[in-house]
Image (cartoon, rainbow, N blue to C red; front, side):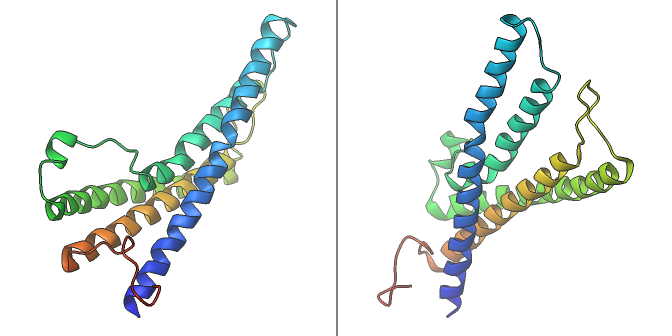
Length: 180
């Protein structure tokens, strides 16, 4: 029963992170269009926009931040391969647990600061210092969501690593005979 619950938690986190990562990836073509439109408007029409730079800055921030948990899920973050691949699976999992714990610690600080910045941005109506002057609160909401997703993904990865250290088996790779 406990193993089934752990698998459900892990798969649920996997699904949410995957959906958010793929959703964030759809911002890339939109970002390219905004930048291309600004270049066309500035150099062909000789009429630069007041909003394209700010919008592209926000969209890039969204893609980078919201894609972090998805990159973690796909094991796309950098690693010290020369050390990591020359040790046993159990030692790798210990390395993973240390790095996941440090990541969660850092992200928890960023999450706490983002909540404070969001409240400030709402209270004082913070805006970007530009001619367009868009509000900043949405950026802090995105930061909170991104940190939450990344913490959830790292927590999920910790569960899998701890399970491996105690059992010597991969939690999600092998299916039980009853389909769990």
